[in-house]
Length: 86
Image (cartoon, rainbow, N blue to C red; front, top):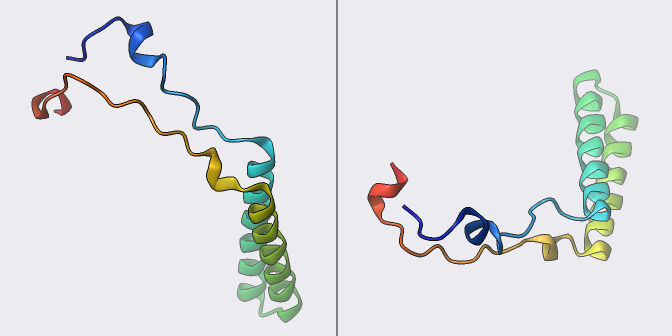
């Protein structure tokens, strides 16, 4: 079992939720895939290219917002053995 109180165990875990701007970029890219997917199933080149355009916009937003800096590395867990994971 992990040693320490529950408050000590979760004190440095941080949040994996990300910023609102990062979620906006991800949402734009998700919408792009949905629109492009509908375009593929309906054989509509217009929807396919709108999806591609939205994907490019979402990718640029992701680069500008630097979404990969949202990753929080947890503090190392001390005192756990292989048996504790079962």
